[in-house]
Length: 158
Image (cartoon, rainbow, N blue to C red; front, side):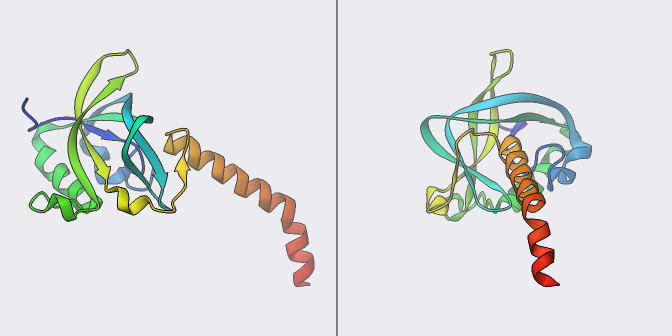
């Protein structure tokens, strides 16, 4: 199997509308909903980490990258993820070829940045395996909390 120009499976801040999407938005030629089996997603604060987990499912998108910009995009993504191809075992993420399942049920091999399990110690599991849903739910919960408590906050300050 050639891994030269594989698409990328994005599951976190590289997704459209997320903070790091700008790093490759102009060079992605197609997005498709996809899932990655046997992995789990953890909240590391401002970004998620996907790690191997039998039976787990991670939701994301398969991104096809313009061939003319592929090497540049791959270097930028490797840098963002802290992946050093010359020293993968000492990188927080490894870029690995994995099979993902598209919405239609077809399978596609893609590059996936898989985290080292040591980094998820005491980090919350994202049970849904869906970063976008998780972030939206947490934002809504924070907004609801603020609406409920802001009058008390301002009354205490006066």
